Image (cartoon, rainbow, N blue to C red; front, top):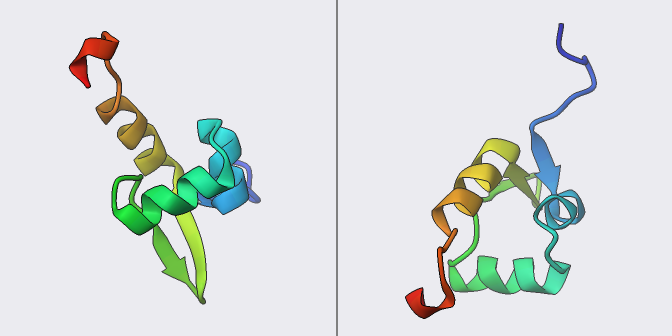
Length: 67
């Protein structure tokens, strides 16, 4: 049974903790369109946890020479 208080939508602070990024980095990536998908709910930014995981998998690299 799923916890009734569990919510798949993370605010910016929760998303930065999840991804281990600084808030400013996440804000800049959102502004440039290079970060994970996000949503605006009532004027606030939220990230779906599944999309954070997908974005992280898409950005993985095997070596620094890929850049």
